[in-house]
Length: 222
Ligand SMILES: C[S@@+](CC[C@H](N)C(=O)[O-])C[C@H]1O[C@@H](n2cnc3c(N)ncnc32)[C@H](O)[C@@H]1O
Image (cartoon, rainbow, N blue to C red; front, side):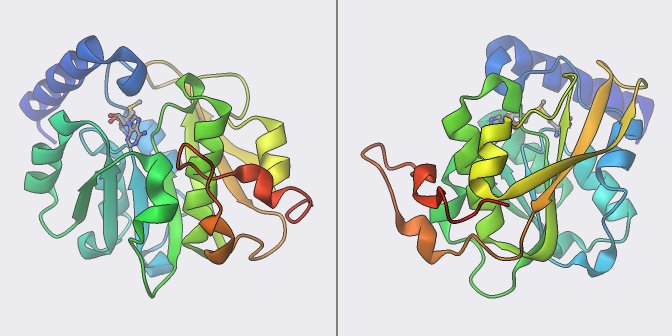
């Protein structure tokens, strides 16, 4: 990426943050160093991959650099201001403007399960309920052995322990970098036991139309 393009991305991102600081939650796009760690365990053979909150596409570019086919990417971005640029930059990828919390009911993969979910979502500014919906949704599409990769600017995994326990998941820190603004760590979140979350289980909804994660209680513990 040229210096001019990087500068234009920075301005685009910064303006988005000014207009919606809670949703964007960072003043600048992630750096290359963080993008490398986020995608370090991804191989071309991982097949369909979902990216949540791609923003200007820093992690998307890193995925392509690792040999992932653009056509294997589904980019889920809530911010309308990023959609046109993502479609123009990654024309073979599927770009969906939607809230990642609605993943489970979106029916976006009918056949092949996904190999990984790369998440740039600002979990620290989300409610526990929303985080649970996002993770439960992500794992309905995940093949056995697949994982969610999530970064954080905080000192620990941004998914609260009770949510990991309730969904039968575990989180492992796989790296971190100070060459990012701000410095960040990356966590791999995977199943403790294979395939405890099935799509049928996610038919449960509460009055808000959100996933009732309590429905998993006692069924997914490690
Ligand atoms: C911290 S930025 C990360 C952007 C990019 N991945 C990066 O690292 O530079 C968070 C991104 O998540 C998007 N986002 C926030 N909440 C979302 C949601 N509920 N569903 C989908 N995208 C969301 C924001 O619009 C923004 O693009």
